[in-house]
Image (cartoon, rainbow, N blue to C red; front, side):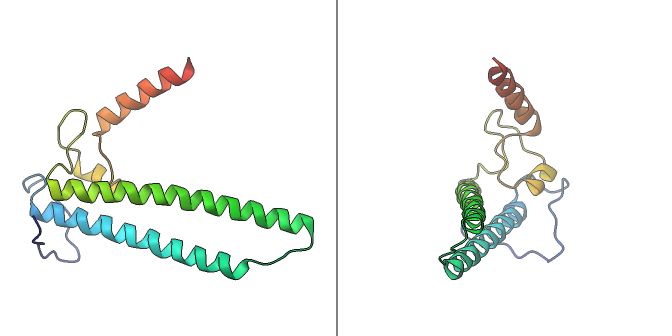
Length: 140
């Protein structure tokens, strides 16, 4: 499955095409790769800014504010690192042919859901069931 299909710039997966045909897979592969590249560029920019901003700030309030900002930025980077892991997992699913199918039920995940959340592993119905179960256990 290493050959990639040519898509026009305005291509969008259609329900009229066979689900997860080559064109669908290529569309989502590109979407995931573009998203990953965007996150990596943002991360590189943050690291560069943090290196430039590394300085000794004598005022305690200013230093505390800077440390808070830095901690928030590092938490954001950690979330993005985890997101890259999910993007990589989605790319592997595209390659092995399991992408776009619900891990719970095996049914196709809607193209609209995948377009909005290309790392989705559950259909909307399965996701809602999962969240309801999670809420029940969390409230105990």
